[in-house]
Image (cartoon, rainbow, N blue to C red; front, side, top):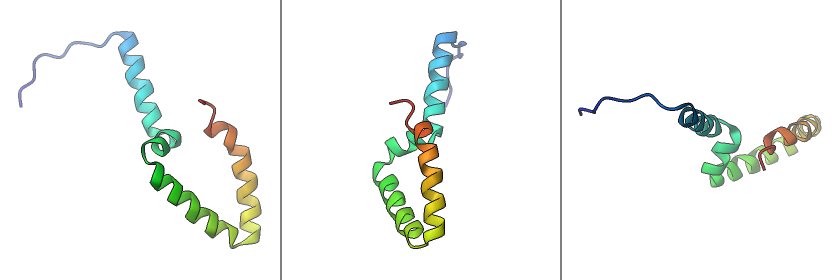
Length: 74
C-alpha cells in the first residue's frame, strides 16, 4: 500500500497525539474503553482480597492512597 509523502506535525498536533496516546496507556483510559472488563476485574479482586483479612486491610489502605491519583482528571 503506497502512501503519499508524510509531512511533519505541528507542535499543537503532536501534543494532541501524545495526550491521546498517554490517556490510552493509562489505567483510566483502559477503564473507560473497557468498562465491563474493569468492573469484572474490580469485582474479582474485591472477592479475592476480601477473603483474606490482612491482605484486605493493606489493599484498602493502598487503594485509598491511590484513589486521588486515579481520578485526578475528572
